[in-house]
Length: 264
Image (cartoon, rainbow, N blue to C red; front, top):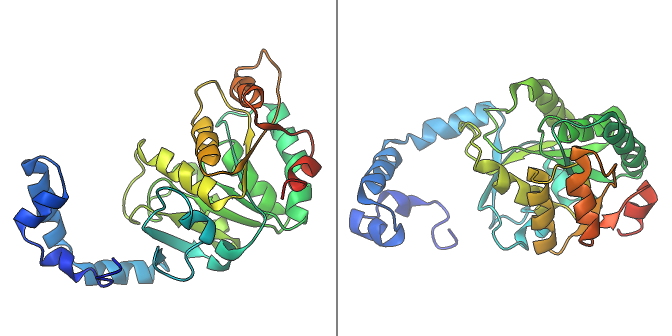
């Protein structure tokens, strides 16, 4: 991309050269090239523009510094909303179960509200449960939040969170590395999780089962050199098995907002 910012070589590279660059079966390569050459790029860009979807590439000066430092940063970020949030400090990723307990929800609000009032930017994945509640708590206090999608910006998932996503766009920032028209697929969510971690100075895990996707985000945070915070829970609660294990493995136990704030 640095040698060909316009990406014009995509359409002039011959079949043999593509075969060298992409070690995939020939039938899949043929399908890829068929799709590539059937694209009407101008029409797609017009659709994105009409939908107020913009993009940043890794070569743009405005590309977030923290995200650029991870091992596998996304080449392109599609976004809607206030991109100035990408340059803000005190960014906290918040992740957790899709089925939080009343304890988890109460603890989340108790810990998050003071941080929102102190201008922390809350980053999460627009999923059901803890993710959605993190965004809602932040927005209810007039705070700043960034939502990271697994699928494209024109295919919000889950559908039940479309109103929330629209509010995030109006008052914060919504991001995806996936082309806007692509539906969310299971394999996209671990990729989304690394962006949550990559944009955050620390990641707070609020309730997670023993094999929760939130633990993937926590692992990514460790690999990215970020602080990992976890809410302790009842040892008999399935929703706390993952967070309790994180604490046992060295994550920072969190009982109050102050314990997170002191690490920033």
